[in-house]
Amino acid sequence: MKHINKAVLYLLGCTMGAGITSCTHTPKKTAAKTDIVNSTAKDTLQKYVDERVNIYETVSLTTNLNALTPSDRKVLPLLIQAAQIMDELFWKQTYPQRDSLLAKVKDENTKSFIMINYGPWDRLSGDKPFIAGIPARPAGATFYPAGMTKAELEKTDLKDKLNAYTVVQKDTQGKLITVPYRVLYASDLQRASNLLKQAALLAEDAGLKKYLNLRADALVTDKYTASDNAWLDMKNNTLDLIIGPIENYEDKLFNAKTSFEAYVLIKDKVWSKRLAKYVSMLPDLQKGLPVPEKYKREKPGTDSELNAYDVVYYAGDCNAGSKTIAVNLPNDELIQQKKGTRRSQLKNAMKAKFDKILLPIANELIDKDQQKYISFDAFFSNVMFHEVAHGLGIKKTINGKGFVKEALKEQYSWLEEGKADVLGLYMVTGLLKKGELKGDIKTYYTTFMAGILRSVRFGASSAHGQANMQCFNYFKDKGAFLRTANGTYRVDYNQFAIAMNGLSNLILTMQGNGDSAGVAKLQKEKATIHPELQADLDRLSKRGIPVDIVFEQGVDVLGVK
Image 1: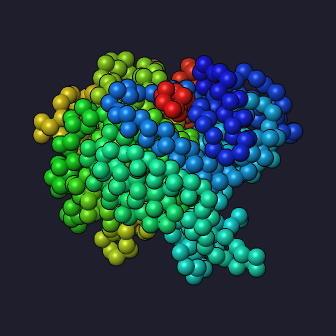
Image 2 (image 1 turned 135 degrees about the vertical axis):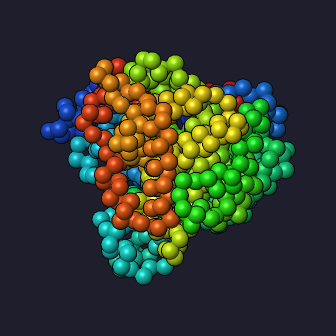
Image 3 (image 1 turned 180 degrees about the horizontal axis):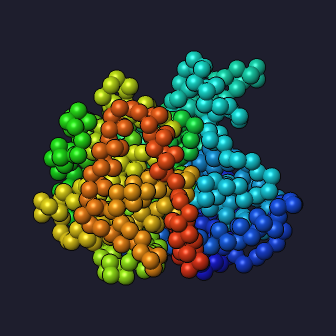
């Protein structure tokens, strides 16, 4: 991280205190280099941390608050307080020993890196442990008993073992049981629920008021459908909040359990109006997908919105490792089929990644003659249509294996992200041909190529990183780009389109067939970084180009109380 100050000491002091406080800063690098936990590997690990902590660039999460009403300004701090509780809950899910570990560690760089990664494993380097004596990261996080294998759990007839809102534990007799989130985290969830109820009382927008009340109830009942529907029904709100147990990325055993997170958002109504028309085009784009008819019979839902936001607070899962810059929710397949989803573009965070990461990468690795095609508008569109593309394709297998997510289990997330990447590009191509999107296809394809080189740096433990590795290797094999003698990448625009259609066909077919074995084979063969690419990525690190961003955020940064 660049430009480090006292924020890390401030945050760590708050972390070691009791409960949630008004602390708002994200940990940042400090120059201190003192002893860490005693170990024969001490020097090696210290060097590793000192190097890796620099891969994050610090960004202040701010926005123009002039669009907020006096009531909104009272609601906003309550939403941030509720988000902070989600952050604490995510720690309990991913590494509940946080405080004891931080008490042992003396080096400030190491403390910062623990906080960034929500534990002692480097999320952007294959979950490598960076504290001496720490074992490999458990695939099931804390969702299942320590040491339990996938095969052992599959053999049990335990009810709700794969429920999204339960934890599998052993009782005092060693018998397997499931404990609902609403029971295990009751106290924290009740506090968050109370904050949302307070915010609902102050909210002026009827849609937001209804959603906050229903979401408050959902947090303490584990019943989220009504609040998900109410969230989709909101149309005129300026403030927005995504909160609760949502994504499955942390559960690498079954991709079943959800992790707590929150985004506090302020809608950019001008940009949102520009985007509104694209969701209605999904059915026509679905019909043109490059797969046989049986893989595209489903009709995408269109009763949802495509909006642009400035995000003013990240918490929990979305703040761990690589930071999300666009969101496609809800994840409930039945709601997706019936109503669609809301695609939320986090414009300020997206612009920060473009300026601080993608542009420097393009200047280093994209062929000089094609660097002129890199643009933020193309980056924004590629990311946006990635999220929209989650609504394309197939949700249920064609052969009776149920929903694709159920059939592919732990292989689902990375392949679905790969689908969204390539179908987002397919949407851009189709909309340009229809005249619904303006610009040169070379701009979108070249910026997409730079985006691949940005995202492969997220590593093999990230679903997005694996998806981009797959895309890179597939496109390379199809001649969609070549690596020049100067060590830069040059796009072949005709082959790029051919590779796009080929990968779209491959992914949609595997999803439709529920082919988990085939997906596992594809992951092994394609979702890997080969030495030549790794050497190029190492060049980026040597140039000091960050891999991702971390935030200064909260009420102090925003100037609200």
